[in-house]
Amino acid sequence: MANMEKVKPKLELLPHLPGSYQMRDINGNIIYVGKAKDLKNRVTSYFTGRVTGKTAKLVENIDDFTYIVTSSELESFLLEINLIKKYDPKYNILLRDDKSYPYIEYKRSPYPEVKIVRYLQVKKKDSKHLFGPYVNATAARKIVELINRLYPIKKCRNLGKELCLYYHIHECLGYCVKNVPKEEIDNMEKEILSFLGGNDEIIINKIKSKMEKYASNLQFEEANEMKEYLEYINIVMQKQKIDLPDLIDRDVVNYTIQNGYLSIVIFFIRHGKLIGSKNDIILIEEDYKDDLETYITMFYQKHEIPKEILVPEELDQELLSNAINTKVLYVSRGPKKKLLDLAKKNSNIYLTNNFETINRKLKRTSGANEELEKLLGIKIHRIESFDNSHLFGNYAVSGMVVFKDGLESKNDYRKYKVSVDVNDDYNTMREVAYRRYYRALVEKSELPDLILVDGGKGQIHAINDVLDMLDLRSKIKVCGLVKNDKHMTNDLMDGETLEVIPLDRTSDVFHYITRIQDEVHRFAITYHRQLRSKGSLASILDNVEGIGTVRRKELLKKYGSIKKINEVSIEELSEIIPTNVATELKNYLSEYLKSKEDK
Image (cartoon, rainbow, N blue to C red):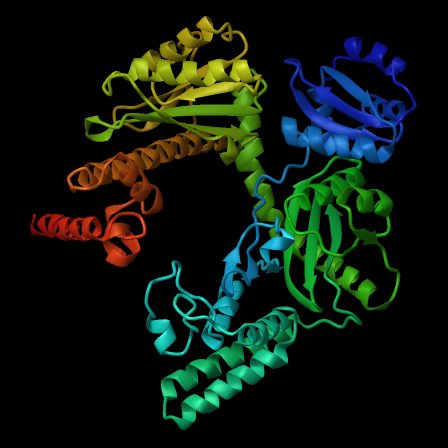
């Protein structure tokens, strides 16, 4: 239960003003950030009356709160968003599994080019146009592939010094050596942009024309390929078509609430076509509207903002408009209302179809995390786990993975090159732990509640020595993952008492700990292999006359492996190193790879 002795006197002093409030646990960590039109009414509501679900769990862990008064509700909302991003609070909605969507980019300068990208910041002077987002990456790639087949735009990654195959098969205008007339590029660009902007007829007529040409020349294989493209375009475009009176880029947001879960659907409508949707299910606080408004705002900080966003009537449209900097509105009738209703229906179906899966995932993640809390008698938000790798006696490394409330937090993962002897696991652990936690103290970054080490007493003592040195022993719990005689994780070892804590191998907490152990092992091994690959390549490059430190670094940076260097031409290598050195390198690699095959 909340620490009412500390909280109650502060509640009486809260002002009836807008602001952001921060709930803190017994260690002073921010576990929830909220906003309020009236701080006194909002914060007091947590400690008076009945709370359930996620809010009840939050209140159980509140030891204190702080707040910041703002001049308006919008200001408090933006402050809330910034604090959530900064502190990553345990009980806030977090877009952990969010991803960037692919977009199709058309670029005019210096040569016309169409490709898949995943960034949003486009400067006008770059002459770039973005189309998307495409939730289906395969569909985006198919469209780019089709445009490249139908139009003679730039296709090679690096411009050569002579005309390539694409020019000779009439799929490129030879930009590398020819001055292509501006009018020709203008006409081609107009058609490409028109198609990407929603004009299907242009591309359909283009495909039909190509198909007829191939058929008349008895090129039946190519004609059939065009026929398949035509069928694909007709199916996709028919599915995407919606009944709207305009071609404005807009998104449609709606939701369903059931059993403490909020199911959200966002439709992406571009140029009159529904090109995809975003679905999400999250646990909510009792005041779900705050959670939903926060979710929407944070989503559009990572993704393209359309001209218009349709939302349910109960959301604060003015607040969202100002926070996202676009038109946010509700409509009560017409085709737009039908889209809102359709999004609502989809959110309900998505929640129904995924309810059991989400429940099981919750049990395996935050449920298992809570089980571990009970087992160790501590509150756990953040777990950090270390593993060392030094295969073949060289390139010693260590990896650190982070789990928050049962889920991987991959942005917090860290890699370490180790300077100590590769066979000295104790000092390897000491070095890595010191570097990690000394830096955390200097930068005042978040510390873990629990450190898991892959090993027993030796590894635990190494971590504890560092925590003692940095005066962190009382703040961070350490446990070791103890293996049985078959080298399989069997139990936990308490870092304070060195007592072995038996684990039920069928329990969620055992599977949770095993998942953390597997993940840190995978992460460390992957990093080690990357270093070995670069190291072996570096040693090979050192054997080629004419490749010194600078050229070696450039080759490593661009290609990263022997296989990739061997696949490129001498001409491409000549962009980095002289032609005679590139020829020598290719000959050396050929002999090197042949000798490996003979072995």
